[in-house]
Amino acid sequence: ETASAPIEVFGGWTELDLVTVQRMEVPELDTMLKAMAVEIGKARADRLLTALKGAVDERKATDKVTISAVDSADSWSDAIVDAQIKFLDTGVPLDGLLVSPDVFKALRKLKDSSGHWLMGTFGTNDNVQGVIDGLSGQLGPIRVTLWNKADDNTMTFWARDAVSIRTNGVVQLQDTNVINLTGQWSLHQLSATCVERPDLLLPVVVGAGA
Image 1 (tube, helix red, strand yellow):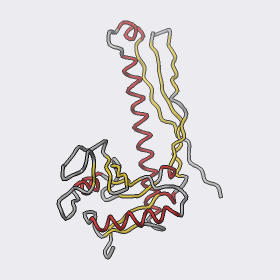
Image 2 (spheres, rainbow, N blue to C red; image 1 turned 180 degrees about the horizontal axis):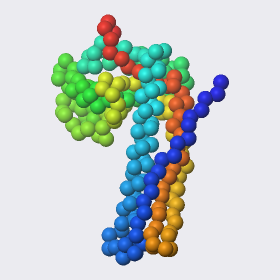
Image 3 (cartoon, rainbow, N blue to C red; image 1 turned 135 degrees about the vertical axis):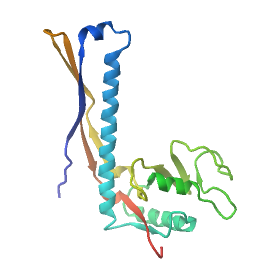
Image 4 (cartoon, rainbow, N blue to C red; image 1 turned 30 degrees about the vertical axis):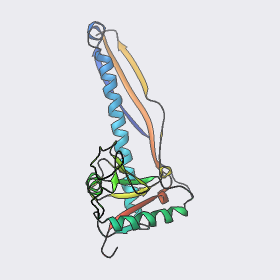
């Protein structure tokens, strides 16, 4: 079987007056180029989000882990064991759990019967709120990472080999117009987002009787 992913072009351009570029005390051109590079990164991240979301939705039809409620510590304990067992057959270690912001907040509030926080984010996790460390935490043996912009109630166990981003470096092109003394600058990057191992995505869904 053969699979492919489209090659996309992310980029932008600007046109500036050459006299302004040469005489401005503020590095206007550098500022423009940095802004375009940031936008390329944001567009690439949005494409990854779309690809991951689609892959996770498709996986729900073939394999998933079911929990009774997001705020059920016992259910999460069982789900972690079930996920680790399922990943034994993939030949790849489980890297963690991706969750939408609403789920991350719910997990951060989980406590055991003694009132201790169950998801540690910093320090000893001994009945202290702690500091959220890079929007990730530790739930038992599982690293939990906030999945920015994911739809509410989205959760999936995953391994990093599930998805790859194939890119070249960001290329800068430029040209000048000697008649009106303007310059044109552009940045672009070729990128392909590949879901190479969808079997390394194990969605978590909430259902009765879990």
